[in-house]
Structures are given as C-alpha cells and as structure tokens.
Image (cartoon, helix red, strand yellow):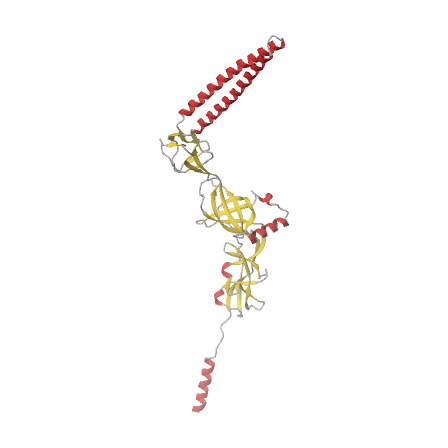
Amino acid sequence: MTLLLGFSLLAGCSEKNRYVPPPPQKVGVALPLHQKVTPYLEATGNLAAVNTVKLVARVQGFVESIKYQDGASVKKGTPLFVIEPEPYKLKVVQAKAATDGAKAQLVQSQAEFERQSALQSRQVSTQALLDKARAQRDLDRATVESDEANAKQAEINYGYTQVLAPFDGVVTQRLVSVGELVGTNAATELASIIQLDPIWVNFNISERDAQTIRAAMALHGVTQAEIINKVPVEVGLQTDPNFPYRGVIDYIAPFVDASTGTLALRGILDNKGDALLPGYFVRVHVPLRPKEALLVPETSIGSDQSGRYVLVLGSDDVVAERKVTIGQTFGTMRVIEKGLTPEDRIVVAGIALVAPGEKVVPQMRKLAAADSDQK
C-alpha cells in the first residue's frame, strides 16, 4: 500500500512540472505606406555675398567728413566719405572757363575763315591767306574739344570727392579718420560694402548625383539653360529644424572637379531680413521630380553587419527578416528603395519582443501619411 502511494505522488509531481509554452506574442504590424514623395539632393554649403566692394579714394586729399555709422545699412547712392572737394570744384570752374575762351576763339577763327573764303571766291584774297584761316579754325576747334575733355575730367574728379554706395548694402567699419590724407601714392582703402540681399549659397553634389540628374534631363529633353533660375533650392542654418530659406539654382559649373569628384552649383536666395550672412555654413536641399515610393517608420528598420532589414510576417504569421535598401527620410518615415512590396506586413510595434522564426499574433495598424516634402 505504501509503495502504491509513493508511485501516485511521483506521478502527480511529474504532471505538475510539465513545460507549457507561452502564447504567441502580440505585435503591431502594418502595410508599407505607398505615396508620392519629392526626392531631394542633400548637401552642405556656404553663403557668399553677391557683391562685395572695397571703397577706395580715387582722388588725393584730406578726408573732410564720414557720413555713416560703422555697420550701417545704406541705399545705393548714399554719400559715405567726402574728400576735400573745394580744390576739385575750382578745377571744374577753371576748366569750364578755358572751354568758354576756346569757344570764343573758335567763333572768331570761323568768321575769319568764312571771310577769306568769300574774298577768295572773288579773287580778292590769296590762297595762302585762306589756308591760314582754315588752319587756325581747325586748331581752335581742336582746342575746344581738348578743353571740353579737360572740363569733363575735372567734373569726374570732383565727383570722386564724394564716395557713394554703389549698391544697397552694409558698410564695414571705416579704415581712415577725418582729416587723414588719402590717395597719395595709390588708391587708399576707406571701407568695404557688402550686399546681403539677395545672397548666394555655394555647394557641391557628387559625380553620381550629377550623372543621375543629367540622365533625367536627357530623358525629358531638358537643357541646362532651361533649368537655370527655375530649379528650387532650400537652405537651413545649423540652428534651423527645417529649410525655411528658398531660392533657385542660378549657376551650374560646366565641369566636374577631378580632385574632389564633385560638381559645383550655386543658388540665389532672398534675404530680406538679413538673417543670412556671408560665410555661414548651411544645409542645402534641392527638390527633384516627385515619384511614387514605399515608406516605413524609421523605428521599424534594424541593422546588422550585412546591412539594413525589417521584420515581416509570412502567411502563417511567422516572423522573417527581410533585407532592404533604404532611401531618404521624410519626417519619421524612411523610403524603402528595394526589398518590400506594398502587400508585405511589417512589424512596427513590439519589435524587440520577437525574433525571426517565431509565430506571433498580428494586430494590424494603419500608418499615417508622411510629409512628402522636406520643409
């Protein structure tokens, strides 16, 4: 009896400790998002002023006044420096007086020539006197032309006594002081003026991207001249979360730099508030032709030594690893270039809880539409 009771207890313990597998894990799955997106070229660039000019003294004299504050924004034609104008004003008066005297002399020599011509026609005067009158008339005419040129040059030099802003821009700090003698041996630099609006962004794209673009242009029968000032460019500063500054491509280099394997491009941007400064390091996007694409959440993509992958479910709800080729990001979504079809169910939630080969309980979800443009 005791022996039978012992066997009964052992049998009971064996049934109680038997392994019972856990139920299949529940995971969130979704179909890839299928929508149209706008691909883009991504680059880094530098901002540069469209116009930068050194203001110099083109005449000799003492600086009489400085008419701007260092760093001021000025309009085209604004007087910035005045260089001792009085001596040059007197030279204008002197040159004009010389011109007036030469013109009076020309009137007299012209009258003498006409008188000698009339006398010669009646054979009252000699040919020698007529020739002399003609020579004097021509000499006086040349003197008038020379004096008019001198008067014009005097007016130009007088104009140089005021250094004006050649365009709208910001003037740098002055390099001379009031009362300082400038323009003695060479053109003395007074300051610089920089145009901030519009502003250029210079950047480079890879040779491969350049070939892709040119192939697309050839496919659609578009020439480089036709895309200048039409292809948009978007720029963001290092502190910007997006790309708020917009412009167009206004230059594409006609050659690839062999030393870097890149093609130089330039865009021109509006800069009304002077938020952009020459020399800034910026991020650049160039939107391309929109296309259809498959997108998945960035968080659903894993990586290992062989590359990127996503977890997909087969028809039997068993998890499998699928190698994919990724593309560009749009918000929290990533374009999948190769490896997925629109019908594939991908694991988007509970990824860390499952592994390839496991059977799961799928819970279907719908992915929200991605921002199709990079703003």
